Amino acid sequence: MKDKKIKVVVGITNSADSKVAAYLLNRQGYEVLAVTFLYSPKSNKSGGHHTSTLNGINYKCDIRDTKDIKNFCQKVGIPHLGFFSYDEFRDSVIDPCIAYRLKSASDNPCFSCSRLTLTLLMEKAKELDADFISTGHYAKVHFSQTAKSYFLNAANDLISDQSFLLAKVSQNILSKLILPLGDLRKVEVKKIATRQSWEEPREEKVSSCLNGDSFNEYISHNVAPSLLKEGNVMFFHDDLNIGTHEGLHLQRFGESFIGNLYQTTAQGDYVVVDINRYNGNVYVEKSSLIFCKRIFLNDVNLRRTAVRIKPKPIIVRVEGDPKTYSAIIHFKNNDSALIILDKKINKLFASGTHVTIYEELLGGRLSVLGSGRVKYEAKFLEIDNGQDNEEKKVADFEF
Image (tube, rainbow, N blue to C red):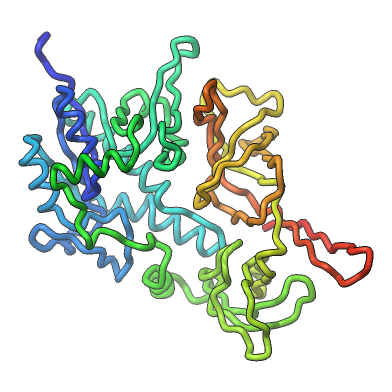
């Protein structure tokens, strides 16, 4: 019994990150069992290859080449199992993403996919009598003897850090999660993979994930037309009709609108700042005029030891934005919170956008305090009305 190795179930994809994670654990003496979840329908299986042909949808979570994974496992000397998990992927990732899109809100599938993968790994670890699970995420898990709780911290290299994807992971999963890449930089992992000739298949690289023309087409074919409301494109500050669009599900707050401008409309960098779901009108403004100071959150999930009694200085990271922002968080009832940024920023965050809340440790390290989703946009439009005193029309409205 004393010679029995600790068994770890590792989630393996075509990515170099997951391969290096499995390789390092194997070198460290763990009994590694590689597991791959196939998020495509079974009918997509053809030889050793799987393609993202879910009605033409492209998504990063799909495994493109199972033969590549099997070859890797054989070279390293670890067993490999594959499981078809399309039904779980559809229920946990695709359907929620469509629901948010129909509300003209944001839903990044990478967050749902990460949670699904960890959940499935826990299930397989239990079935296979494994001690731990592991992935190729760049983050760190620590156990606090004082708090008797597991903490999720940012990776050493903040550029590679993926702790935001795991911010809502439960204590049950954190207690079983090993993250071998937390102390490494992505460039170092890439060097290990290159030396071992574990190149990522070129066809795996997908530019968009449930967020392109293919997914828009999928929604159009699988959702009732009455829910895909067309309408006009309007200027926010004067309600001037400047064009048309083909459906609210195509629009993104804070991003360029998708539609057609009339020939008489001046070209410019117009972004969506408001949507009327009753008549289908989309309101736009120049991106240079949009400023945000406050972010309202719901679905706030904090680690067990967090204190909600008083405002707290935090560091904020918003999905899709590589920057971090200093702020103060005010905790509200019903798992909601108000974040006030130290400085206003020239950005707009859509409802549904994931926000990760960090506290700064000694030495500048970041520890995940929790996460939430934008409840509605706090938008501040500063528009010069041409008067000498430079009075501004300021609007604060919500979705």
